[in-house]
Amino acid sequence: MLADFLDASAPYPMRFADGRLNHGLVHLNRVIDHPNIAIGDFTYASSFDPPQDWAVRLAPYTYPGAPESLRIGRFCQIADQVRIITASANHPMAGISTYPFGIFDHQRLPDYMDQITGLPDTVIGHDVWLGDGVRVLPGVRIGSGVIAGAGAVISKDVPDYAIVAGNPARIIRFRFAPEQIAALLALGWWNWPVEVISRATAALARADIGALSALAQR
Image 1 (cartoon, rainbow, N blue to C red):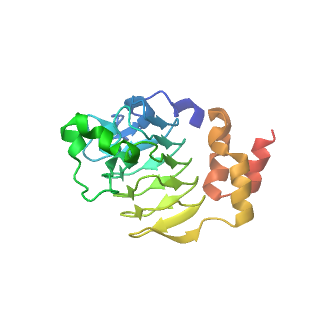
Image 2: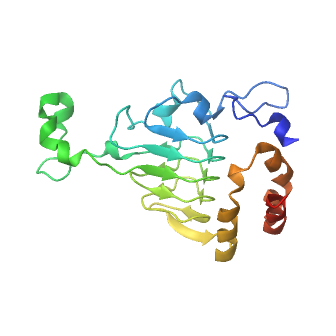
């Protein structure tokens, strides 16, 4: 049963066939403790070169106390070399020069305060799959159920259950019809208790929305 082994508290939730833990796949909220980053249960990232600091690997410009946050939902799947570039990566652009004088002499920061405050958050929904090497640019909002193809550069908001690819990322198609998307968002299976999700995996695998809905009504 899924509920027997899907453990949200486990930093390393996957084992190889020989029983060894896969240290290249982590539940992100068990290995990241950062005041500007919030990540839901069961969201994992994988890497063939696991870092010491997953926050720096994933979102290197999000520093503690930054004027923006990164929020990622539950059950997301983040492949190797994904990078989320949050708003603090941007240099002030309203003046003549984009050279960041203030980072070298903090006494000069007041010259830029109106440009480096109130920066937009980056928000990723639930059950999102970011393929190998995806880049998420500052202030983007990615809906639930989105799939981003390998190497996609996401520079603008992506609606729920869209498939995007390319640079800049564009919508290839939607995974379901509009009424099905509305039903899935209303069901919000990612918020169900694990024991209920355990009974729902067959319906999730078959895209059987009717069976999923029946489980929600039990």
